[in-house]
Length: 217
Ligand code: E4P
Image 1 (cartoon, helix red, strand yellow):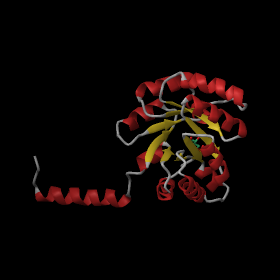
Image 2 (cartoon, helix red, strand yellow):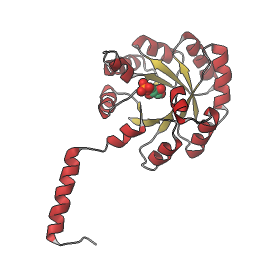
Image 3 (cartoon, protein in one colour):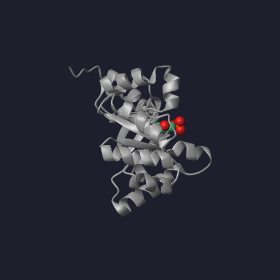
């Protein structure tokens, strides 16, 4: 499973690029607002750091507006993936970008039928929001599994990008359900390497090693 980082914070992206675990970046209007930065400037800066896919979301809600904005975003760099909402207008725009060879991420997906339409519209990625389903007492991970089955049934090429990941447990659920990608907040990516037994075990090994009085180099 690939890891995208879900942030518009350039400092976090730089830091995580160094780990070698990252395969891409996703942003959304809320994350851009949180960064306090100019949208086009921040996307340009992120694309200057990496040639991995960088999702940048349109703000228009009509097909024509989405096409106009998406073409502007795609003009920033070759690795920009145009992020479109999963509405009929968004799906029409998705088809347009498919025909032009521009990659898309169809976002705000909350049902298997929506994911089916995204695949038929030629989306590069579909983003099911598992955390927001969990928030309303539904099983986000079940949606991922259903989409995986449907896409396998018909050999759809659209990649399942598990989004709205809030915990390390969500990452495991996405991997078990066969998501192609998980977009994960920076703090959760860092937590994936942590386990209290690893910390305790390491402390014990260090203490026992010091008792031996030996050194390796
Ligand atoms: C990513 O593409 C999504 O916009 C993001 O994962 C949403 O996460 P949230 O539900 O925690 O806001």
